[in-house]
Length: 286
Image 1: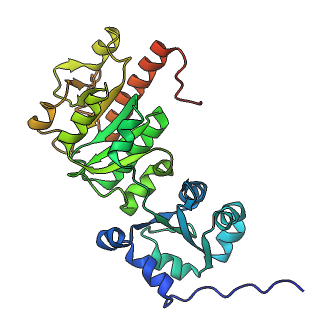
Image 2 (image 1 turned 120 degrees about the horizontal axis):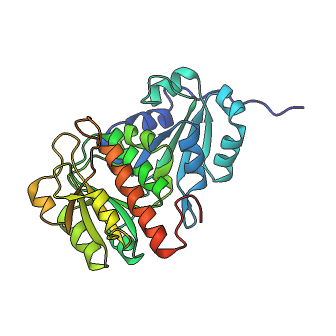
Image 3 (image 1 turned 45 degrees about the vertical axis):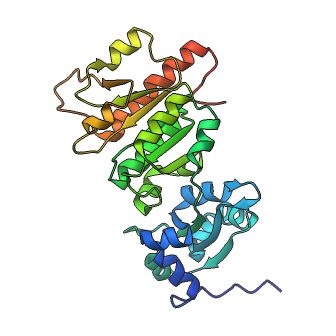
């Protein structure tokens, strides 16, 4: 006899109600849990763990999604997560997206102490200072991951890393590299510089040109890029903390670049320069 198929979990279940509350920052902070939505995020969450502790705690899935993404659901079970079948309405109630994809995971916080990042002596770091838009924060994290950065730091003036929009925009990269949160910008700059990292501010009004820096071969050493607010960039007091303020050159008629695009250009410029100097660094593999 085939095993009985469990009934979908009710919208009134305490587990569903607890998951719904994680859409709010104060509940996320209190429980130290956040939501990861969609197949890519859930797959990466299931594969991630800190030592013996799995990151993915629970998974809510529609029967259709459980069948379509059987490998992901199996991976979640293998990681020790509780898997709940749920109706599309329950998933919509938990989800923060307009068109849910049938999978919503509950994950443990996974930020890394800043001191641990420094101890690893990273060669490429993205520092988000005063970044308030969660979509931009998540996209910069994704760019940092793609460029081979070893860490991302969010200052205490930046958006919540676990905001659902930030998690979605990272497209799983949140689970790939160490991220420190709530670090005062002065502490971030001083700590990184103390480990031999050159700290550069990315700003459209910078007095140094990224192309010139590459031509002068100044970009090959350990580097941290500080990225500022989407609307007004970096305040003068933050720029003054860094070793140099660098602008991405605009060769066409565009007025400026958005934050994520500028971050991608800067991070890939450093990754390329470091690879050329070291002879073994790769942004496409180990």
